[in-house]
Amino acid sequence: MTVDELPENESGICIVRSHGMAPQKIKEISDKGFEVVDLTCLDVKKVQQKAVQLAQEGFLVLILGKPEHPEVVAINANARIYSDNVYVIPDLDTLKNIEEKIKSHKRAGVVIQTTQKLEFLEEVVDYLIPLSNELKVFNTICKSTSMRQQEARELAKNSDLMIVVGSKQSANTTHLAEILSGITKTIHIETQTDLTGYQDLIEKAQNIGVTAGASTPENIIKSVIESIEKI
Image 1 (cartoon, rainbow, N blue to C red):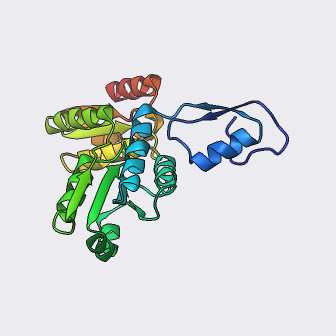
Image 2 (image 1 turned 60 degrees about the vertical axis):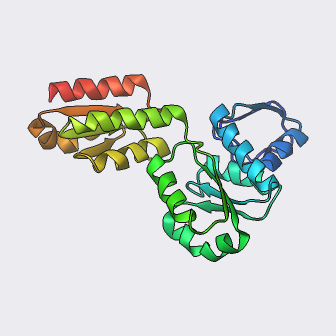
């Protein structure tokens, strides 16, 4: 069962999901008598540790990612234990808004949400180089995410239609769709039932590539491929 608020008088096991959680929240859960099982992804743990390291070393910490994403919320919470100079950067415009703070601090450190695009990291680093006397960058994008994105790029180059399968709430899936849309015609669906709105597009395509987000179940991917074959 997923809960947003803890009961006052309960006991049992509380599982921290793969995105991680703020240390203060984990302590609160433990203090209320729950057994905490921390299943935070090891790659996410690494981002938290790097953000903490930068904060402890006195860098202005820049976390690249979506502010409302639970992974980013947890990274931010961990770093802010050690410094107030921590900023979540979802886009370049946000970075530009704190340009004077970056210049005055002179030392900037960067980590990135594990499911973000490499292009975003490169864009930010290029922008920061003239602003900082000292710049420390940790590429904390998950290796499997990077590999999936690269493989999908190669597939898209030889396809006149790419179909990305997975939740539209999933960061790595939506980023896949964004990347591929710059290479070829791309549609993002959640299940095979969504294909009905694209039947004409599918019928006209000569080469169709299918990729999916890391969390997309195998049976859904298989159902999508079977539905495409029928069309």
